[in-house]
Amino acid sequence: MCPVLCRYISRLSLLTGDGCGPGTERVMEKWYMSAKRADFQAISKKFGIDPVIARVMRNRGIVGDEAIRMYLYGDLSDLNDPFLFKDMDKAVKIIREKIRERQYIRVIGDYDIDGIMSSYILRRGLTELGGYVDIKIPDRVTDGYGINEKLIREAKADGVDTIITCDNGISAGRQIALGKELGMTMIVTDHHEVLELPEACDCVIDAKQKDCPYPYKELCGAGVAWKLILALGGDPEYKMLPYAAFATVGDIVDLTGENRILVKEGLARMKDADSLGFRKLAAECGVDLRTMDAYHIGFVMGPCLNASGRLDTAMRAARLLETSDVLEAERLAHELKELNDSRKSLTEIGVEQAVAFVEESGMAKDKIFVIYQPELHESLAGIVAGRIRERYAHPVFVLTRGEEGIKGSGRSVEAYHMFEGLCGVKDLLTKFGGHPMAAGLTLPEENIEAFRNRLNEQCTLSDEEFCEKIVVDVPMPVGYVTEELVSELSLLAPFGKANEKPVFAEKNAVITSPRIVGRNRNVLKARVTSSPESGYGVQGPVEMVSFHDTEALMERISRDPRMTIAYYPRINEYLGRKTLQIVVSHWN
Image (cartoon, rainbow, N blue to C red):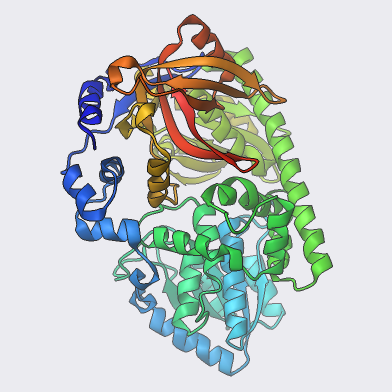
């Protein structure tokens, strides 16, 4: 790192502030600078990377030569042995026997990306090993989450000998016990927290169960399913790795350690994904599998799979992955894309109605928002809650009328433990569950107002805790950014939970030639130059783009073109021409 940038970083420690400042007209922001220390020059020299890369890794908790090597260059040889899972040897012995005896095996998954992909991996892997296997995925509305008594009785009536769950089952002790009473073999593969083991189960594959020696605890359901297939001797060429990687991103688990390797290696193999339906869905969504990244999974293709479980049946997505018929694959891919387009339209309507409700009802003064939208499809409540949380930086519950009464989904902010908040009003609820950042619940309609009032009465958050936190990894003038640095930043990918895309910032950057473009006027383009005091101001302006509150940003530039910006650099390629571009996410 050059001396000029070192001095710049030292001066810009003032980015860390004690008070909230206005980020948009609705959401307050508090900017912090991550200031973890290490010998960045030594790390840079040892691993041949820019010191900026070393700083970002330190901010992500990557400390020590082996951890840095794993982060930068870890590959499939660094994956853990699947037999480190508790009960894995037992599961392998049972399943091999069932395959040998040609017993009827049923995989019961879940209706989200992870559940769909883990179901596909298990059925495909077991079938390739000679198993007689089918899939059953619960209906979100009529069945609810995970394995239930109806599905177990149906399996028995169908002549199923063995049930294997994936992405669910760890909390289904009563249902597992019923399966055993009916004479079936019950195997659970899951990745969720273990409150109480289903004791009647023949074996449980879940790294989070007590005394499980498997060293990495953050695999998603499809990751666990793939490990089971590997332990059975299946998938020797890792052809199912792309689907495990897809689910890992789609389920928003930590992209650290083993997950990081799975996703990085899976994305590299995505161009060779051999599911006809998967390839047709990519084509329908306009995604080139040769250049697919985590964004395309999380925001383009993944939502199409999720939409099948939200608005229709996830069995449609499972069929898409399995079909070998070209016409059927094209039809199913088109249907899933249309379902997702419908979901997006319904979501936008739901968000608009929720915003109007907040603004017109005076709810914006509440600490906890409780929004009742009786006509909203219950599967969209969580998405709408998340969007409102992003807009206002408050914890949000969206309630809707369901088949079993009023159903709700909540999305929280870092300072508010949503599950504990629900525990404080549990006498008003029929049932509930969740964790610090998200929750689900049902309650009688007559309890809605009391639910809102008591949540707010019990909330002890201060106004400052409703600020959006902007954590800057490295204060860095845009004049320091080069195509070489942007290329090096790709070493940090894939980005996602626990490995977020880095945030850089410049104080007093100069913005010129702003203009708003796009059919919906949601893109601001401009030129940005480093401030003269940065030491980089003599360099020419860089192209800038922002998708964040463009009208307010335009007004701010018109008042004063000098401002602090948070950004990420990228190379924009258009008609064969590559240009350096700064994507501004926040400003003040």
